[in-house]
Amino acid sequence: MTRLPSIVLSVVLFAGAANVAACASSAGGRDAGDAPARVTLGFTAWPGWLPWQVAKEQGLFAKHGVNVELKFFTNYTDSLLALETAALDANSQTLNDTLISISSGAKQTIVLVNDNSTGNDKIIARQGITSVAELKGRRIAVEQGTAHHYLLLLALQQAGLSQRDVILQPQPAEAAAAAFAAGQVDAVSVSAPYTNRALYREGSRAIATSAEFPGAIPNHLVVRPALIEEHPDAVQGLVNAWFDTLEWIKENRAAATAIMARVCGVSVADYQTFAAGTSIFTRQQAIDAFKPGTTPKHLNFQATQIADFVFGTGMVQSRPAVAGLLDERFVKAVPD
Image (tube, rainbow, N blue to C red; front, top):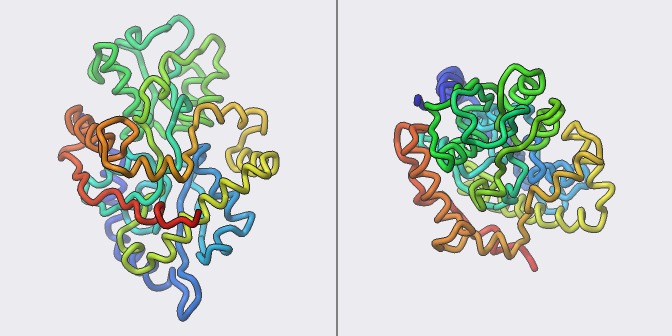
């Protein structure tokens, strides 16, 4: 399997603009004098990242002394490319996708664990297909090179199959869900909220979810190392604002859910169904995740496992280096 065709192509297209973007981030993207540094933060319609919108609307970034330009991406892969090319200072992305970016030479650091996917990533099949083993020879829509692709590979491996045993139809997540709902493919691997659209297809059902692979899809705040070097106070402000936002959500559940559902493009009722499939980390859970360990709850362990897997299955051409990937100091410094 080739290395992420869509990302390789886009990186080539963006390469000429990378230096310009970097300059904009370090010069035009920063306020002068004593004003807080401006941070451009990307996110997409994942339940564990939508609290960033709540933070913005409730003034919690400003409260913690950081000027955030929040950018919502309808196409998740576009956000990954934006961070790779320095069009963003920080992005919301999975551990899997961060490692894939690093394998192509990107410099990125994880400073916060937002959540773990515990069921919101699903492989959904049409009527008549009841197990992953029955996907052999079937057409599957998936956003290639993302955590959805990783989940599919894990599930196929568990069923004694490989990617060579199925027919992939690479598409962005929203388009993949729509293609499945329209009957154009036999199955789709996708995350919430696009799972809801896929399940509109009569007789469809989830035949595997991230709940079956605990810890395999952790989700993070990832920053360019330059942001840490130049503005560590801004990084701390982002992390502080995150946990402050979680407290605000607890106390204002209805208002927060309305904000996140609106950005997600779903009803409040539909959004509420995502809660069980996304396990938002407390500060203590985030601290524990950064500690070195040998179980799926430890990020160093998961990073090593994922790096071995994506290299071994051909998702990347070189094994991602995990040294220096994790920086726990900002989570540890959050006020009690």
